[in-house]
Image (cartoon, rainbow, N blue to C red):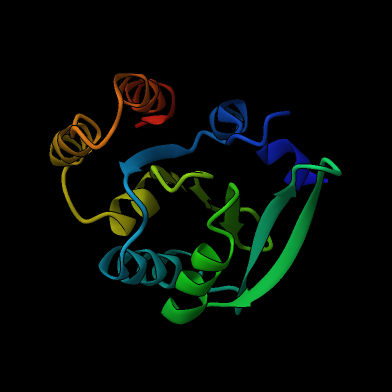
Length: 161
């Protein structure tokens, strides 16, 4: 099952899967907001107009299994699934795994991955501005030094262009 390849044994996003697919990837510090959801869904419709729903993959930490939920392609459904599963990592993709949206268990960051054009369409700013915004937010004093170090490592691991 491809869903098992998407996650590491700790249910993090598997960077090797992204590299094998030659995906670009952009980490964004913070939970996704309504504007970003709108950009993301517009990019999905523009780049992958061959399906009518998303699949959401949610790890069950006790059973070590991955639950699969089918959701509508809409801003409302996207936000609802993020809120309903705030307490765990999750991946949203299409039936063909053409792209990946990954949300962190603590909502500290999310990652958009897929073909370069899709990633560019999903987050409407330059790579330089995205990096500046990421580190401006991650270096905020709401995060401990350990969390800031963790978020720095997320950028270095998942920023793929």
